[in-house]
Length: 366
Ligand SMILES: [Zn+2]
Image 1 (tube, helix red, strand yellow):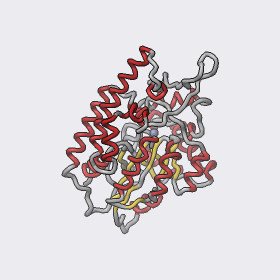
Image 2 (tube, protein in one colour):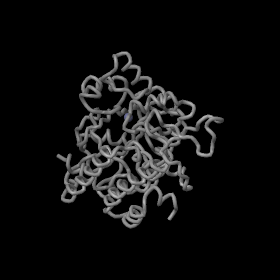
Image 3 (spheres, protein in one colour):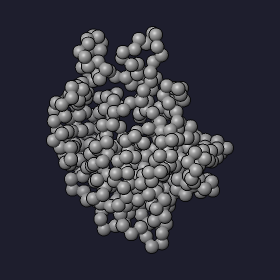
Image 4 (spheres, protein in one colour):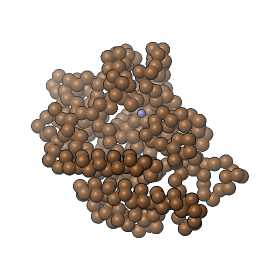
């Protein structure tokens, strides 16, 4: 077992992870991970304070403590002589390491409760529906979890592209089956490096919604711009690399869909009519110009109906501009006749156990 793996995960969690990786007992790993990572974080903090070098310094550093402190300086570089090198985080545990004890406790409680409640829940197989699981990232240490999610979905239905899902919901014949339409918001680089190869392997044509102002931005060169993004999306608390247009073109060539997430990742209800029009039209035009194909799908930033967008006014505006769908963050299944301008989605993370998927799928079923 690699030394850094022991350092960051702990013996117990590493053992459990290996033992139960492909079983539905991953919740044990989740709980153990949370506890061990918290303990490791405390030890690293104390050690860093005392400046004790144990040869594990680079691994145990906490490079991202928040948007305004999120600078990682290469450990072998004298910062007074060279400019700092800013790097996006690669691991989910680097993200969770920054979470407070309260947030971790809440996460454990939520996960444990969902696990217990999901034991007796059954995904409705006597109905036709389309579920839209959506993600934000697949970090390097989430790849196996993401693959597990896709395999789990296939136990209940088929994968479907966003184009086909929108058409099926409007088809007078009905949906005729059970489908999963996977999507990603915000356009982080690990969508291309980690998620897309796995999606291709599993025959899943997913949709990716990008805020066009941030596509192609690099942490080092566009620091101020990206600070602005993460200041507005505090749940990340750390910086990540964004997709480039070349990444987007490769993903389209692999069968994926690229949709709009506005230009600047803005809340629609905050915008004056002229700016609203600009955000929706310009992001569409840029994507079409860069990819050479129509952009007809839109995912609303934050996506809560009545809070982040007006279901009537903004849906009408999107339709007029030429969008064929509006994806929200309301949970629940979509049925035949569901408006494509009020698509419900299930937010999830690849690191979460499949019981959480089952819990939400069954809880929201009609
Ligand atoms: Zn977003």
